Image (cartoon, rainbow, N blue to C red; front, top):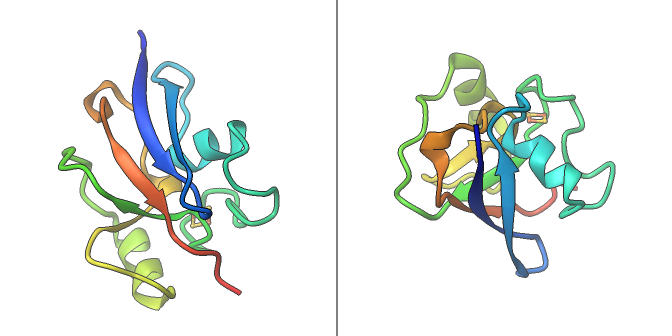
Amino acid sequence: MTDIKIKITDRDGVLHEIDAPTDMNMNLMEVVRSYELAPEGTIGICGGMAMCASCQCYVLSDTELPEMSDDEEAMLSEAFNVKDNSRLGCQLHISEDMEGLEVALAPEEL
Ligand code: FES
């Protein structure tokens, strides 16, 4: 198993090109946290249960991603700042298919 390259634009508009491991059972929200790309307490609030939308991000590349679950869809229908390309980072399990993924973190919900 190898690392994949992902580009993440943080909430200040700064682009980070990072290596994400495919063999550690991580999701995108956890990768953002492990690289400290968003302040503690502003992302992953529900612990990755698709219940808070603090991990919302916009998918900028045309990377093929797994379909949304009903839970993810329901949460995004209630969240703020949702766009057509919104996904919940905690529901995106890092896999080799995501090589080259580019996302931007959605603004923090206040
Ligand atoms: S961490 Fe709460 S919805 Fe993703």
